[in-house]
Amino acid sequence: MATIRLGDVAPDFKAQTSEGEIQFHDWLGDSWGVLFSHPADYTPVCTTELGTVAKYKPEFDKRNVKVAALSVDGLESHKGWISDINETQNTTVNFPIIADEDRTVSELYDMIHPNASEKATVRSVFVIDPAKKVKLIITYPASTGRNFDELIRVIDSLQLTAYHQVATPANWQNGDDCVVVPSISTEDIPKHFSKGYKEIKPYLRTTPQPNLN
Ligand code: BEZ
Image (cartoon, rainbow, N blue to C red; front, top):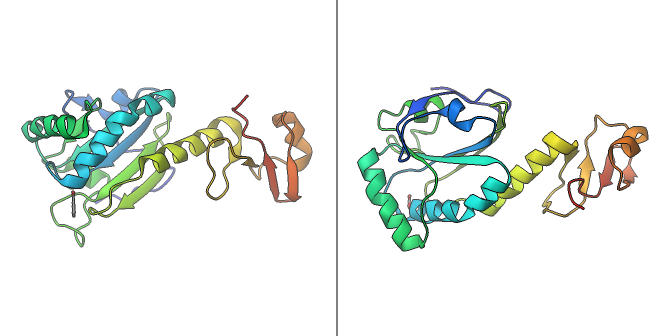
């Protein structure tokens, strides 16, 4: 069993998926990635989640994020289930679902928590940056469907930090002011942020979201 921590390189693997074989790192290319696991095919909560992700595809595309799902069921099972997802969620599944029958990927990513279930994966989410570093790990129980608005919100925050040197405060939403990262001195803020800033405390400086006009 591997333990993956933030900042680690996301383990690479080869896998069969509903869209053909992938070598994970090659498949990611220069994109950001989301890898998320499901307890099993033909389960109710997962059906709604995968339908939701299919509808959110344009949001992931806008952010240069590739998404892959995983369960320990096989390809034939995935194919039948995808038809059900398309029918019941009124969508078309447009991302690969990994068939991890031998649990190689689940074990690499520590997605099976034996005290929750010996056989099924929990609902893990990994966000991976273009350098293949793990930037976010969230684990939900099987009975709780994930909030994909929250996932998009976190990706926006991660990308603001990566590209614009800001962090995001509690309950931040797209368009709200951001926090200047501590590594930038207050004196240097004007060099980095043309929209101005507020110094609430020497360690708490905010600036309008830099990537908006
Ligand atoms: C599921 O849909 O995966 C699920 C629903 C209730 C409890 C556990 C799993």
